[in-house]
Length: 356
Image 1 (cartoon, rainbow, N blue to C red):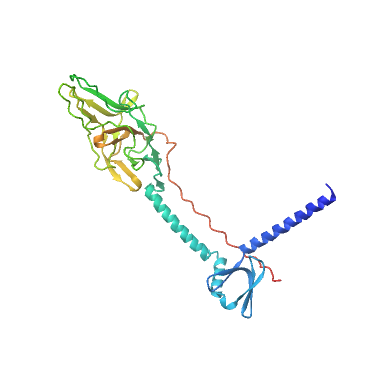
Image 2 (cartoon, rainbow, N blue to C red):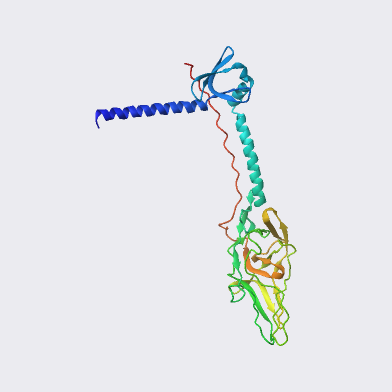
């Protein structure tokens, strides 16, 4: 590289350093600036000022130039208070107002969120968009376990999972079919025998699952035609639209669990049975429903079922087990821990530059 090129690089570097120093000084001056507060509520950022007759001469922290303002326009009491508060580490009025507005907005957002996600235990809310959750206690800590929907097998017609009794001209004998789910144990095992189930009934329209045992009324058979089987009679009808979720015992059967039984008598009359657990149902904000057993559950396998009144039972169920000795559930939702923000740094004072 030639001597001329070297001098050019040196000049460019010196110019950049000077520009950087100027910008650094300007930013530092604004950060350390005082406020010359006027009686109309506005203020000038200044690193220092002095009174000359009926004028106040101040060094602008924004423009780094000496400027003047009539002394009668300055609110000396407010100016002095601002400096005292800053020296004591107190936030300035604008910061206080911003904090108040932020606090109001945060409170409003929290109120909206709490409606959507009710509090079920200290620092533990139901998740937004959740469907079916079980409130468990593991090692003295409340936890929420999401229950997965599983399809119960009724017969070989898995496409619709509808009860279709055989049409026979002369009834001969009774028959029984069971609603079964795969496996002897549910993937989710609760540790507490006193638990609650939370269902979001506002997700989607109608039944949460799509398959059910139909219970539409049948027309009586015409003379000379075979009699059609009647549809299932429910052991328990929901009193309200949201009061349709219940807990049943899941009985082991070889490699499966039975959650319901369908019986057809020789006359084609269909009845439906479930081994129901006594529960209470409570409506919560945000479209949630709380289903709670009236007594502690014995260790074993269970499922949440949806009874749809005259429409029948939803064959999609949400299975779970109760086993106090079960290992931890890896996907459990745990309480959040509140964090305390660090206090703001106290501004430091440096000697202001001298006037030119």
